[in-house]
Image (tube, rainbow, N blue to C red; front, side, top):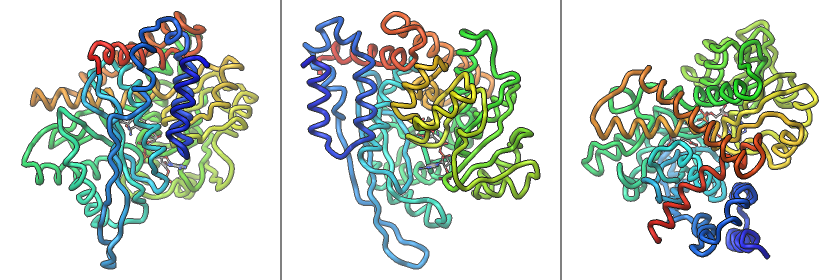
Length: 443
Ligand code: NDP
Ligand code: 2IT
């Protein structure tokens, strides 16, 4: 058995029942093969054994009371995966599907994504199986406070800096920051995605979606000498990433024709009216179905997926494994030219293989959605300096970072794999920096 096969078997044996984690590990191990096999230094330093095992995995009880006075209990998680190049950094997800496998896949991918940004941030992820849907403002606040009461023991501005993810936006970060400050009596940049009056960074809200569109634009310009202008774009999701991807893609001349949530999806041949989506999702916390009630040119579907719509560019921005082999085949048949992953691991392995075999330009999540965590790292810098930069300053830095990620990914693909294999390119470029830091640090 090769070194990679041995490690793969050992990781599978000790992480039974964690399919999402194994999916993420398999993808990385398969694609970094040319690098790992070209130099015995990785094997001699047990880098693969070490990089697939989190530094620590924290699981805790989160008790809270609902509006009827009942005591409720959820499970909280923080997986501190790797801090070779900086403090643990990564989001918190609140969704009923959250379990250790999901948090570990997210934390594992975060190591390589954060490395790609070129900024000094390690990898971690956390969250809870708490379902924020239908909860009152008071219930959300109490849950966030209870969650932070335990989490505060494990994090800090130079230790571990959480942020948002599914179900966690500015409101939740605000409640958590308030509780952290109260418990620790410390005013420090311990969370990112904070509100602007208390240390948040301009452009963090927009960063993931904008970054996704910037890097897809970089890819289109480099390979096809064109961009979003005149393209039909299918987007899934209607949360933070989807909304700001739609905004930037529209600004660059694309037409967004779909958005979705966990109940269904809308098609608007006239181009999605984002003011309506923002009002439904950001202000009223409603369902995407209401879009079709308010916009006459739109139709609502409660079955099927956005991927059945003919488009040039597909941007999955909802959740893991939302785009499978059948969706990939449909998109390819309909002439899709580029796919950019806004969500984490939204395409199944088979779907990725199908896109690559059909020569569809495919930009994987670790590169494509790194703009969010990159601006989080810029928020950390501003907090350390006790300064705030302008929107333009942050947005320009984000553009530079996304171009740099594209170049690094494309160069690594060319050097070690095939030129258009950005999956391999992103994994290899992300891996090398972390692995070399781990070797240098000896532990
Ligand atoms: P939000 O909570 O703002 O939005 C999530 C969107 O995805 C909602 O429309 C939600 O629908 C939908 N969704 C979530 N889970 C499911 C599911 N199981 N099935 C179908 N639809 C679902 O989250 P974000 O926009 O922040 O995150 C979206 C993706 O982007 C995630 O994969 C996240 O990990 C990733 N990401 C986020 C970053 C950030 O900065 N926020 C950075 C990098 C990646 P509904 O409301 O019905 O649940
Ligand atoms: O998946 C991700 O990169 C995020 N949810 C953002 C993490 C962060 O620390 O900003």
